[in-house]
Amino acid sequence: MSETKKPRAVGFNHVALEVGDLDAALEFWRGFVDFELRSRSETMAFIDLGDQFIALQQGRTQSADDGRHFGLVVEDKDAVRACLEEMGVEILPGRFLDFHDPWGNRIEIVGYTNIQFTKADHILGGMGLGHLQKTEGAIRELTEKGMVPAPRTA
Image (cartoon, rainbow, N blue to C red; front, top):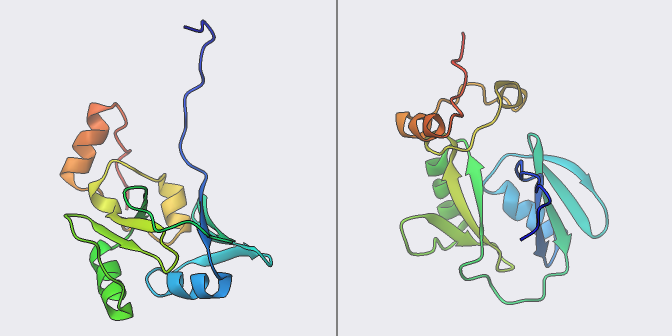
């Protein structure tokens, strides 16, 4: 084994998804989440997610994802479900809120309040989401890892 000290991963900056058509992809995403478009070129579009982003890149050619997916954290999972149903998007079977976009990218929707993933208060505030509070279970997970969020002040 190597003696070189390995750096620790800090998190994700972005996720890149291949799509067939950028205009259609942006319209699809607007159907279930509110977002700011960071920038766009002929072949790529960037959707801001606070201090992270999703890159949509034109040119998907592979078949639909099965198990491979990413979890998109949202303010209100039930509202996303309602939007997807209204859009006629098929929710995949199972205990999670998973679906495919029109190009086969598998997306899992995860509610912010009950998972250990957290954003700094100033990031949430800048996103207009300063009202979000973690559940006791999420705080317990963070506490067990020594990552207790600072108490919020009004």
